Image (cartoon, rainbow, N blue to C red; front, side):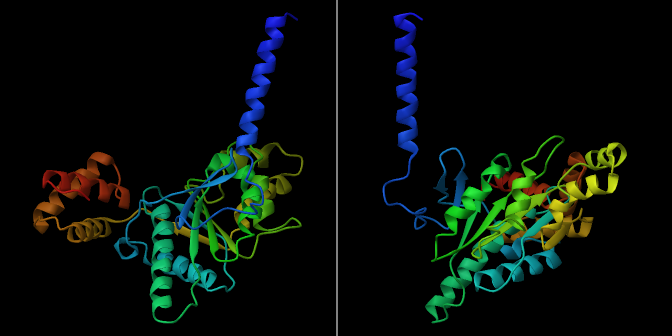
Length: 299
């Protein structure tokens, strides 16, 4: 090996060491500093919680067509914020029907209740912190759970949007262990909420393939679908009908002060949904954004 190669390797190792040193937590730091915001993003690479100063969300009462699941998730989250027993929740079903919007809206609604309660002398609702974890970082979930379990001044909802697993992936086993099982289990101050288009978090052909090729088909399928069983709440979201879709749009228009008569609104909204091939909350807000832009308004 030449002297030039040795010098290059030594320089690279020095840079790696400096990077690792920079990622180390400060001396005496036992957990994250969670005073900057009520929402964070988990950076698994650095092992840090990154504050989200402004969460993209809509008010809870603006979410239409999902009344039943909205009340169930709100009640479950309120129980948790008050220090009572509550379940992990899987929000599954049709895309664009407000699964992730509901989680964020419930979080904001409960914190608003908590603030008004403290002002009136009722501290029953504790501060609720929302932590988003990327689907690719699920294997780091146990590390995150241990980190936030040290915090006594708040309760945490760890949220993974669009969670699913494909063939040959094994990261779902980390989630199974932390949700229900393992020596540590889930910390009492943490809930896990996930959204998915798949009820069992895995594609049907993956489950069917296990059924047809495994030596013991029943055991193989149970291994794959048992992850969803770890969620105490299964909340289903389904495609909305046209009256619900139109009610969503009218609600948004009223909220944002957009002026349009009902007949024109109906005709344009129906045409918009036909060009998208779907009716959903996402399609509704996209139409409202276009309408607001035409009227020279920002929403």
